[in-house]
Image (cartoon, rainbow, N blue to C red; front, side):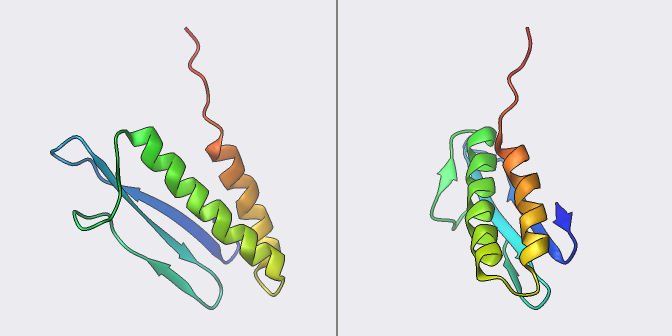
Length: 95
């Protein structure tokens, strides 16, 4: 997802062993970092939803810090936080 100059990605891979490694990437106006999920990641998740939730929580923590620090990315961070918070709420399936 992207808001202005802020971008957040959660990358998840399904392993042959049934585990789900996860990695995140983020971009700000003057910095960024990221990686791909791999077998050397210290944590893998039992399910896709767990991996997704962990990635979203990681981004929420990161972009809250950007927002609180102020600066040129604060308004974009505020906007992307709204998107991340909405994505973090699991929608219950109707049956």
